[in-house]
Amino acid sequence: MKEKILQVVEKSGKSGVLQCDLTRIYGFSKSTVSTVLKELEASGEIVRRRVAGKSYRIWSVMNSPFSVKGVLRVGILKAIEYPSILLTRETCKNIRIHIKIYNSAFSLTKDLAEGYLDAGCSPLITQTLFALVYRTIRINAGCGYNGGGIIFRRNAKIFGSSELSTMEYNLRRYMERENIDGEIRYFSSPQKMMRALSTGDVDAIAIWEPYLTKLSKKYRSMRFEDVFGDYPCCTLASNKGVGDTNEFRVFMDCYKSSFGEIESRREELINMEARMFRLPKRDVREAFNGFKYSYKLSLDDALSLLQEFGLHLGNEITKEIFHLL
Image 1: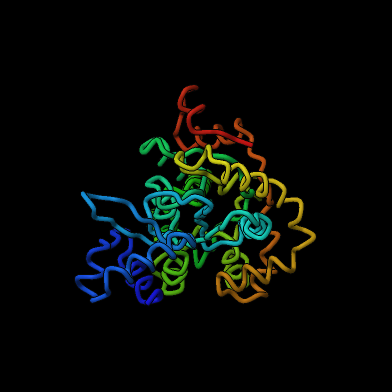
Image 2: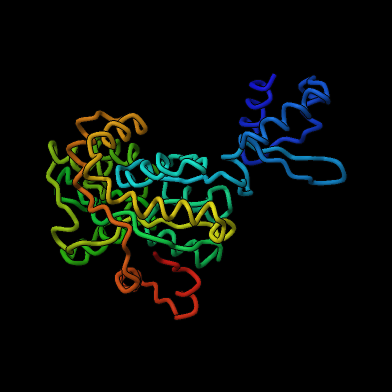
């Protein structure tokens, strides 16, 4: 019965399901539903909120618009830039850390801004834009530097990229530097972008690791750091609703210390990332050093990158958005 109820709740997605509907539509008895929901709530698998009178709406933890005590929901992209997040989940024993994988930085950061994630790793530019609109995001630390570049199928006029991202920012810098009057087409996942490259729908793509290293074996490539020097890629941000909690402070302590273990646990992390992303272990290993992993993020470096992108932040909004380690 617990499995059936949890399945119904998970399928309801972000809308959730009314507790009374579990009895009325699915034929579960009121007493059974009440008992099961209390157990699921206690184990941190669901969230319940009173919505009207005696009615309750139920969400799975990963679809809840509310944070859960003792639980942190962390979003990451399908990239190998986040071994620190995997190590943090291993070392933070007193917090249940749920990791959700996204193909799109836009979708991840939107969920973070709207409270469906407690923390998330996505491009600095994307997080800043959402922070300006929603005013619910704080940028707390770096994740890594570099890790992106351009793969060329032929002389490029039509480029593929992810939208409002570090990839787009560096791609535009490259096009301006080379005086390329081209077109940028946006893709919601690396898989769709790579498919467009293989079919010839685009001439080149701006993409990140481990795809960059793998595609470099077949096509001509250029790494952004070789042209522009080191640059911050993704940053770790939190939703304001969780940023001042004890759980998040413990999480950040573990996150900071995890970077000192990345090199010594390299092979273990390669195995973990290969399993998590369902990628060949060889691809992850070959691309692992494509990033410089560091939680350190200079405010000056961040603001400089944003200014080059066209975002000039005043002192007050800078203080509101950036709460760096």
